Amino acid sequence: MVLLTLQTMTQAHTSIQSSDRAVSLKDYLAAFHRRRKLILLIGLGFLSVSLPLAFLWPPTYKSTATILIEEQEVPSDLVRSTITSYADQRIETIKQQVMSRTTLWKVVEQFNLYHDQRQHSPVEEIVKRFIKDVDMEVISADVVDKRTQHATKATIAFTVAYQNRSPELAQKVANELTSLFLGENLKSRERQAQETTSFLQQEAENLAQHINEIDEKIASFKHRADGALPELMSLNQQMMNQAERELMDVDQQVRNLEERKTYLEGELATIKPNTPILSVTGERILDSVERLRALRAEYVGATATRSSDHPDIIKMKQEIEALEKETGQPADADEPSRRLIDARSALAADLDRLGNDHPDVLQSRRKIAALEQEVVRLNAVPKAKITLRPENPAYINLQTQLNSATSSLEAFRKTRTDIKRRLQTYATRLERAPGIEPEYLVLMRDRDTSGQKYQDIRSRLLEAKVSEGLEVQRKGERFSLIDPPSFPEKPFKPNRMAIILLGVILAVGGGVGSGVVAESLDHSIRAPEQLIALTQQAPLAIIPFMPNERDLSRAKMRWRLVTTAGVGVLAVTLVILHVFVVPLDVLWFSALRRFGMG
Image (cartoon, rainbow, N blue to C red; front, side, top):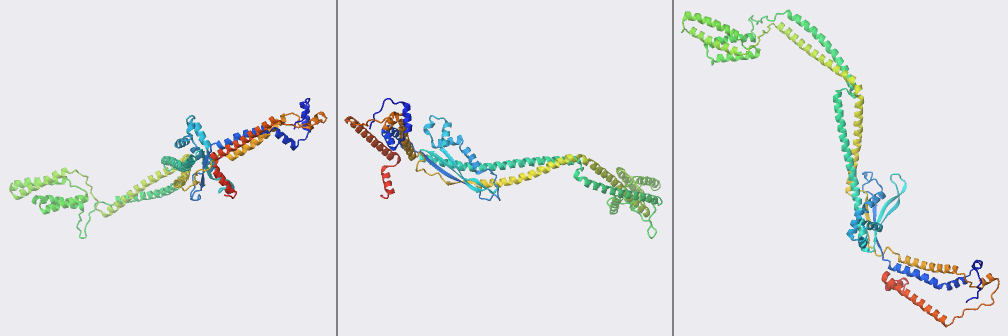
């Protein structure tokens, strides 16, 4: 109904009247009736935007793989791995390696991703888009730390997902990314283990070279020290004491031998050396030298009557050579020369008395010829000094004792000289030891420290080689694919029901809100109570609105338009639902089955 209003109403009076008057449900319904066109228009506007967006937004599919982090098969107490970083750190490192620009661009070219964008966008933008479409999530669990025995969060698995409008591409790319993660983990662990082994090997070689250099320095130092090392001071002192005792003993022996030598020389001076030696029968016993002289004289006489091939001559010659070797006295040419002179004198006398053809003269001539040959032979041999050997046994005994004492005395004197030299050497070593001790201790400390480091590095190197074998044989901590990328049957986004619900909420909220705003901005007086509160007077009568035929026809036209628009929106919604979401027949049978009517 329409109320008669006064035209002299002001804006301030209307505000006071509106704030003082209580609003009832009837007023809300009246306001909704008045603003129904605006509310419906705004609501249909939101629906017209949200419904096409929900049904026309292209679907995006997401394929996800789950990778489990498994512990090493061999107990860590037996074989310790060289990879000591935590799983989440390694995952982040591998992610940075896999998500590099070069690797991702190879994947883009391999599967021809983002074909339209690649035609007008740079490579960096395509890679950023690819990274945005890749989703990686770490899965943690509550575990007990083996080192601290405290509860903590540990990464036990992680997921790798890729989203694309094509479910086939989503699955293929997710599978490729999963392979990259698994392969990069194996390569990074092997590379880290090999780098650790190589580093320790290089360090061991450097330390070995350093130790060799120190050993050479120590050897050179010991050679220059010549036994004056600090560690040999006690030994040098002992050797010096022992040498002093030996020197005292040798000095005593030298004094004894000098006294004995003096005594023997005095005894030897009282005995004749050449007293002849007689046999039991009283005959003189010839020694080797005298026997040699007799044989030489007999040999000269025999050669005058016998030829050089005669057995007696050969025997005598051999016996002479043996005696010469035994005595060491070669034949002297003086004696054959005297015999030669005597033989020539006898030959001259025989020639005058007997003549040239007498046998004695011929024999004398042969004897002279033999003597001449003997003289020539002996003159060709170098002359040696002939010494007479003593024949007195007592003299020989004393001389032998004297020679022995003399030899022993010389030996002890030489020994004393050697001992004194040794004493001087030991004393020099003891004097030099304190001066060279600091440099020697520095070298030895460096050698001991380097040796300990070398042993430590060698033990670590052996552990690193075992750990490298652990990684090469895939027995260490590894990534295991427990859920490979599956073919996505349902789209990951958009959430069409959420968009529709949000559109309905926005349509209702927007329509009601617009109606409230329009009503709050309209200051017209529409109720008798408003007029009474404003004028403090009651109205005379209330005249209802009486529509004519034109008003009725317009109302019918509006109803037809609203009905047609509603039917059109319903038809469009059903078509979109049938084409883009699910066929209507499938939806119908699904509804029948849900209600137990299928």
